[in-house]
Length: 197
Ligand SMILES: C[S@@+](CC[C@H](N)C(=O)[O-])C[C@H]1O[C@@H](n2cnc3c(N)ncnc32)[C@H](O)[C@@H]1O
Image (cartoon, rainbow, N blue to C red; front, side):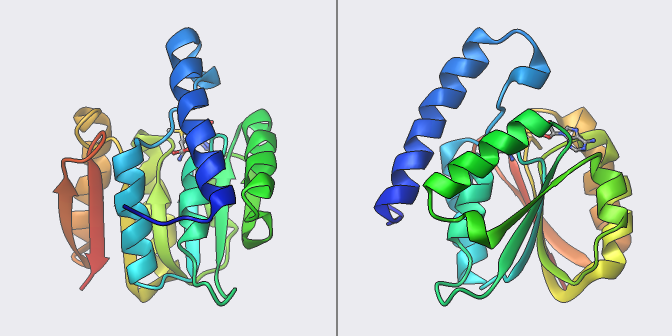
């Protein structure tokens, strides 16, 4: 069991319920929340917390469910920050509200726009990147990020088992870079973890 602050735990449980109900009822894909499954979020949180990541980038914010898990994994001494990108302004507004309610808004910079374009304009270094947006364009984002990664950077990507065809280009790019050791955990929709050699 992961012990989260009451504010964080309350918001996360609410978002879990909201996302499940919303996504079951919503026929338009862009209006679904598509949040990370709870067990995968727990793995992501523990891995980030244990490795003391301080400069985290998330691609695909939605309404902030995984951003809250990531921000809650930043060092407790107040150092470290998360940048999270989404192209949907309504989802980003919801993420801002949810992060605020969780007491984590000050740790997170939300950026609106196409992920590849936003990533191109970011300064590194990042010691952790979570890819959870456009799986087909993730290789392009990875290529732009490689020069901006710290020597010990770790990468995470969701949907490896649920969308193998869409994610295969990303997995091939990670392997082809020759920079990472990687594994796919059969948790949630399939979580890929890559750690720089
Ligand atoms: C799977 S959801 C993210 C879920 C979120 N990480 C969570 O677990 O709560 C994917 C998000 O990526 C955004 N997205 C999709 N393609 C994008 C792109 N090319 N650039 C920026 N955001 C994109 C969508 O608007 C959507 O909110």
